[in-house]
Length: 211
Image (cartoon, rainbow, N blue to C red):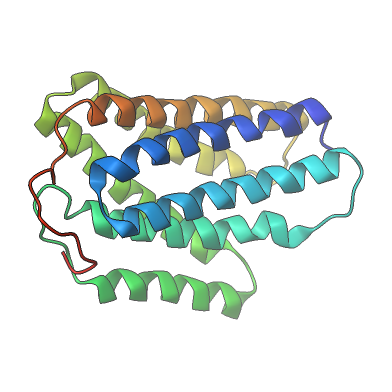
C-alpha cells in the first residue's frame, strides 16, 4: 500500500502520546520493569511509524521495522503488566509465569512464521495493564482517569479489529490513526490524573524486581 506523507506523519502522534504517558507512569510506579516495558512499547510504535514514513517517501520496504513492533509491544506490555500488578501492594505474581507467557508467544511466532501469536500476548498483557491502572485510579479517587483508561481499553480492542481487516484502505488507515491518537492521548491524560494522587509506593524503602 502507498501511504500519503500526511498519514505517515500522523502515525507519530500516538507514539508521542504513549511516550508522555510512560514518562509520567515510571516515577509513579517506581519499578524498573515498568520503565523497561514502557519504553519497549514506545520503541515498537516508533519503529512502525518510521517504517510507514519510509514507505511514504518511496523508500525501501524494511519489513522488519513494521514486524518488530509486535515483539516489542508484547514484551513491553508483559513487563508492565507484571510490575503494575504489584504496585500499591508489593505482592506480584511469579515472574516466571509472565516470562514464560511472552517467550511462548515468541516461540509460536517463529514456529508459524507470523506475528499473530505476539498480537495475542500484546492484547492480553495490555488488558492487564489497563485494568490495573483503572483499579488504581478508582482506589485513588481519580474518577476521570477511570473513564479514560476504560476508553483506552475499548480503543485497544477496536484497533485490533480494524487492523485485522484484510483490506486496508487509506480511509480505514486514517480512521485507525485518529482512533489510535485518541486512544493513547486518553492513556497519557489518565496517567497524568492518576499521578496527581499520592504514589502507591511512596513509603517503600527499596524496590527490587521480586517485589
